[in-house]
Length: 176
Image 1 (cartoon, rainbow, N blue to C red):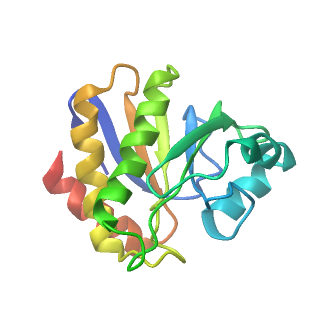
Image 2: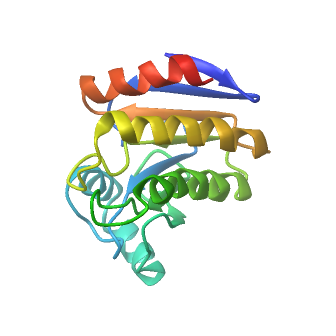
């Protein structure tokens, strides 16, 4: 599913974040130390190779809501944007910190002249953020942030599971 928002296309697809060769940057649901981890971070680091962690380590640590950018190494993209989402129930205010992940990632992409970005469902895995709530924050933040984007023209949510995809699509239908 896709919608137009302020001159940018926002779309939701089910798939693998590491297999998005037509986007300039993928967003890593990172850990504070920017190391290989589980879930999205593990998949991205595995596909990118050890150079990704070597480049990212000097940029660590990052705090919830922050984002940093590196090269993509073995991935078919120009860059990886690493964003640290909040741990639900521990990092407060969760919604603002999660929104900052999306805002800061889009700002980095835009500032670096990137035209397209692929996001996972940040914080919905081991960080425990409820999918419906996280999807609402993500979609609303991206649509609002698109008003200020100069370069980014495609924002893709790449969702691993059917439940995540359905939640994002439901919210995108009424948001853009």
